[in-house]
Image (cartoon, rainbow, N blue to C red; front, side, top):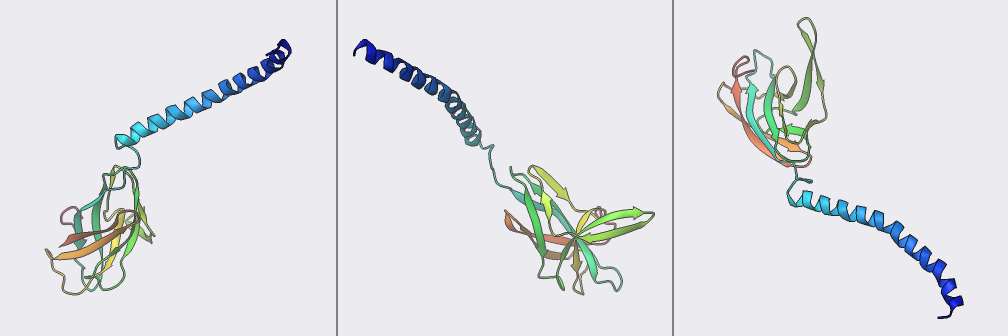
Length: 175
């Protein structure tokens, strides 16, 4: 190469070197982030699915002529992602079941509101009770204390989870 040709290439090489150095920082940062996320995933910490279990299932024995009663469940999500309870069904109920949230309105009165779904956070549990969330159940005649009633809880991600609830009198076993 002649001196004149080298003089023409110097600015071009300098621009190319500057461009490569400018691109190196974001490429290195992306590589480092990808490596960190890969390790996080490899150790099972990323995107683990919801793992739902249902325990302490009970349904109140209907009182008097009232056929509507309530069912309560403890729902535990030991997974890494939240899930959502969409509905509850039972072949032993005499109609459609609905999720209800109860709130004290003052004095000795309360209000009940139907809710479309309930979130079960990752690594947490949801304990239904007469003072919070329950499932309103139109009971069939003939239930007795100690009977078992089949329920299916339908979740957005976990699908259907079946459980048996024991029929209890109000005030019995924490109700």
